[in-house]
Length: 242
Ligand SMILES: Nc1ncnc2c1ncn2[C@@H]1O[C@H](COP(=O)(O)OP(=O)(O)O)[C@@H](O)[C@H]1O
Ligand SMILES: [Mg+2]
Image 1 (tube, rainbow, N blue to C red):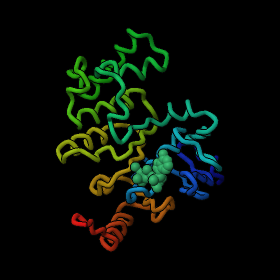
Image 2: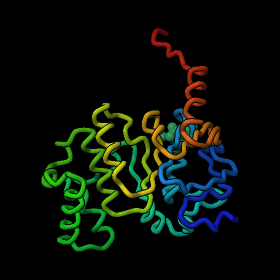
Image 3: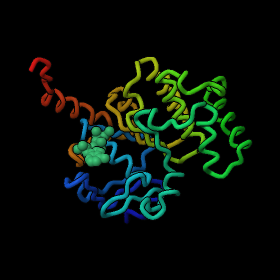
């Protein structure tokens, strides 16, 4: 089987990517076809860069990234339609002052009229239990609600795959549990970078990145205990009193 024969997948085909003078990924090849995949790794391991390569936000310096057969470097617009991307910080994603404008924008960008994109946005908000936010200003929403808005805005456009960069990083436990429940109801395939080991434990596959290389890759029951063991061995003693 050649890599390109796998359709419903994100493929990294001998990908090399440098950040400044440093090579972050060297000749990285892997096939992401499971329904729910987690990406784990310490700060600076390369998770956000890896995610940005999946939909053409970044292009590999050599090699290819294919999304269901589409080369992200050749057709990033098509890749972005297939792969919806939720940024780590909602404030980096939200552009508009009101919820309705924010959700409607994606439909406008796909060619809907102003009136139709508002109808589509209202329907999408209702589908995700947020109809009552329609006229709210985004600044009125809590951190968790803003994150939910980001997910709804992306899912509204019906991508095949949802890529999320540490979606729960700054959220309290009840909010995380609420969003986890919401994600569990979505039909999309998902690739989620996270440090939340409980979230990762419920996924089909976990990839542990370390310094741009794959340290472990397999079911969470295999990968998470190894990651925890390594984290304990390497734990940092922050020096608060220099
Ligand atoms: N825009 C950038 N320019 C240069 N180096 C970057 C940039 N973004 C990230 N890096 C570097 O690339 C490496 C991987 O970063 P990143 O993908 O953000 O890791 P993670 O998301 O796992 O914390 C780090 O060494 C980081 O400093
Ligand atoms: Mg990151």
